Amino acid sequence: MERFPRKCKLEFEIIEKPNFPITSKALSETEGRLLVSVGKDIVFDEEDILLAEFYLALTVWVSQGCLNNFKYDSMDYEDSPIFEVKVEDTFVHITSVWMDDNVSAPVKIEKQQFLDAVNSFIHQFEIELPEIKEIS
Image 1 (cartoon, rainbow, N blue to C red):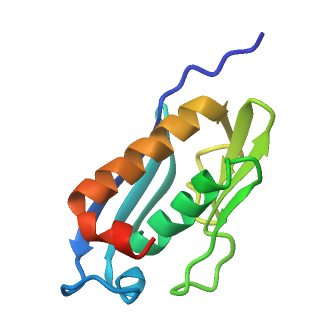
Image 2 (cartoon, rainbow, N blue to C red; image 1 turned 30 degrees about the vertical axis):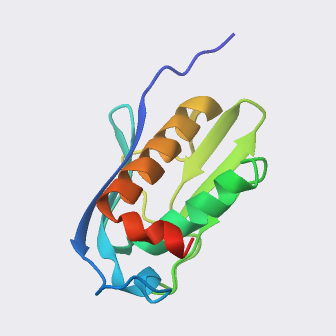
């Protein structure tokens, strides 16, 4: 069986937080940097991403069982999809319209490794901005 042991990471840095109390406006007020890497490959590295919007899209996808493909489009950008994950049995294929030209698209990784990275992102985001759970 072919193995893809490369570790996947979804890292973020919130640069702009919404005013309190947190409302649905937080989706358009929480901006920052999002970095998605698989092993040494940088799949996605952008600043000025609506992180709460991305968080919400991921939580919906996870709550639906991660069975279907995941597409992230942003209200801030016309490019589409900004970040996409195609599910194939026990693997996922990750692409982005902004993917580095030095990375061969799509990047294939074991589905569970990607889900671990997604769950870690969700957990860390909720620690950084705990009130976000109230609108998700």
